[in-house]
Length: 286
Image (cartoon, rainbow, N blue to C red; front, top):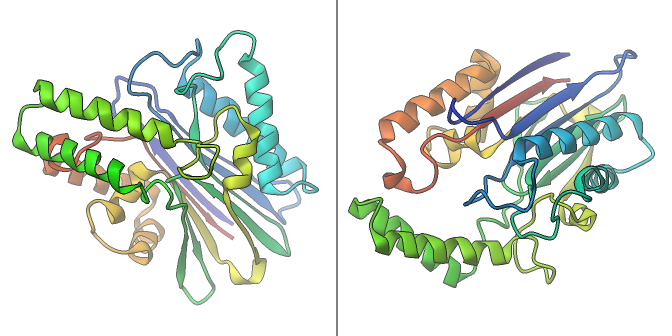
C-alpha cells in the first residue's frame, strides 16, 4: 500500500477550503479516502458564522469515520449521514437554508479484500487505474452541462474580462447576473441543475456511485478541480498522463506544474475564474 497526499491553498493569505484524509485499518485489508473542495461563496454573507473550512473539516471527518466504520452502509448513505451530522453541529447558530450556506464537492472511495466502492459529487474527480494500466475517470459532469442561457452569460463574462478592465461596471453587472443564474441551478429540486453537499442529506442520492472488484483496481487518484486544471484547463495531457505524472513524480509535482501554468497564464482575465485555486491530490496504490 502506498499513499501520497498533498493539499495547497490557492492563496497563502486565505484558509485552504479543501479537505483530504485517508484511513487504513490495522488489519491492512481495506481503507477509505475522502477529498472535499469547499465552494467559495461570491460574497461573505453565507448565513453561517463558521465558514467553509470549518464545514469541510466537519463533513470530511464525519464521512471518513462513517466510511470506515459502517461497512453496512453504502457510501451514499454515509454521505447522507455525514451531512446530517454536520448540519446538526451548527443548525442552532446558522441559517442552513441560505443559498450560500457552506457546501462542497465530494470524492469518496473505500476498499476491502473483495471490492472498491466510489462516490463523486460535483466537479472534483476520481481516477481509477486497472491492473493493465488503463485509467478510467469517474466524473460528475452536470456542472459543465449548463443550460444555453447560463452558458451565454458565462461567455459574456469571459469576453468582458478578455477586454481588459476587471473593474468595469459592465463586467461587474455581467458577473453578478451569471452568479445568480448558477446559484439558481445549484441543488435544484427538479433535477435540472448540479449538486453539492450542503445541509440537505437528499443530495447524496444525486452522487455518481459504483462498485468494482478489488482485483480490477490497482490504484485510485482523487483530485479537486484546482489540480485537474492540468488536464481540463491547460491541456497538458489526458487523464492517463496526469496519473502517470503523479505516480512518477509525486502528488506535489502535479500541484507545482499547475501553479507554474497559472502564473504563466497571466491571471484570471485569460480564462475566467480564480488565478490560483486550492489544489488537492490523493493517490492510493492498492
